[in-house]
Length: 198
Image (cartoon, rainbow, N blue to C red; front, side, top):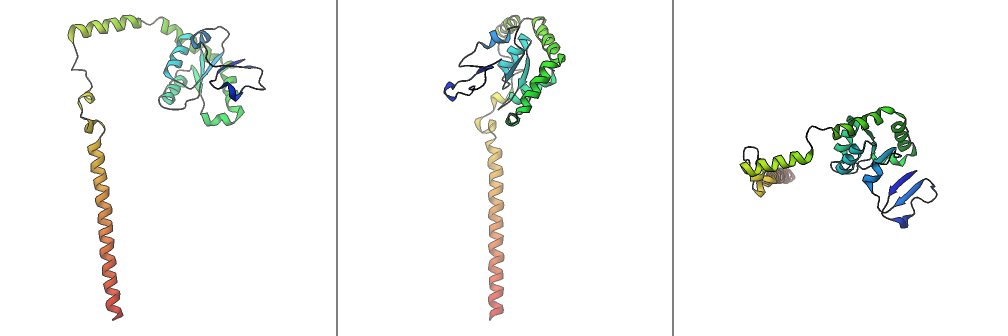
């Protein structure tokens, strides 16, 4: 059975498929921690990947935009899931083969369980790290030694407007020079042809 979060029920996208449950909203964290869940198909957003890793669930990633491609590559690199291109969804076999491999290859299940346990056993809880960092900042104030220099750039420097302006000026001057030389050559050829005609 597939549980599909789909926001337009009027499309009737699951009609004719008895094993698809459509829902406007699903409690993702609860579903991920359900022992009956075999795999999670996601676009590869950081939140979904983090929740899946914590729950120890193997992933099928179908990235669409932005950081999703990098996130999905990380899923593959860590052996906790597989990535498929959205264009390959036009072929039924692509998703089916990916799901079949994910379900039958025990390495994915082992890797996801190991990663989930590593998250549980991490040396310092995130809350402690956050509190210690805040205490450090309160004691020493803003740390200019590790501040990113990009924060001090002007609007023009940050967006490279000066660089683009220089490049644009170079292009305009090159085109102008080309037009000028072409016109001069055209005028010279015209004078030569007029002299020959006389």
